[in-house]
Length: 287
Image 1 (cartoon, rainbow, N blue to C red):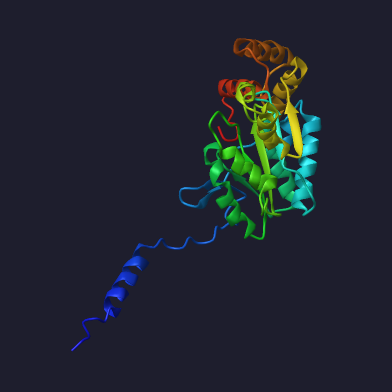
Image 2 (image 1 turned 90 degrees about the vertical axis):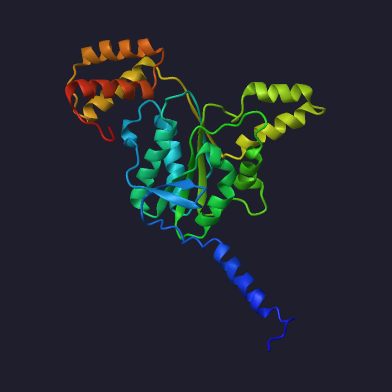
């Protein structure tokens, strides 16, 4: 007769139930599956991108010095040398994210172990979890966040500060962080001014907000394109995709296109090229 006080069977059943409920361990990410990935925090995984939407570095006109600085920094990082986190800020549509993707492609030619990982702005709080996966891999990673900015009551910037420099562990040696933003300090000026005006110590508020962008060793500014730079973009795209158009038509049509949109930028130039290619029945990469 079994001992009525013997709880071993019950404990065994509880242990088995808990094992069934426990989440199955996630397999290690396969970073050899692609050259670029998107971090998916909900599943704790990395979505491979088989074809990155980017243009060759040589087609990015009007940002030659900026291109050289970022490419040199990226190549040093890929070679295992010291390199800085980079913040690309400024005018919309001037090729900030395009430059990051193009610089990765150029640097990866000599260093195939260099991977690009995109993290969405709304997932920035999960960056520490993302880095835990990356630091365990024998590769090097550019973690890229497009259109990074923070608004009032958003405290996730504090987590980013700790990851970039200030935390006890800091940024893994095989990871560098590149971000684009329309804001130099990643936060709206009125947000900083309002908090400074109502704070007991206004200087401390400003320091807390601005110190996030200080974590980026490289600040690369982008400004609105001149007319000459805008036309150079159009000509470079037209030559690359073998579009038939005279220089006189480029001047007339492309400038009219920019006027109707109220801006001259790389994005506007590309949109004109899409329209031109569509009219000529020419296929473009990714379109």
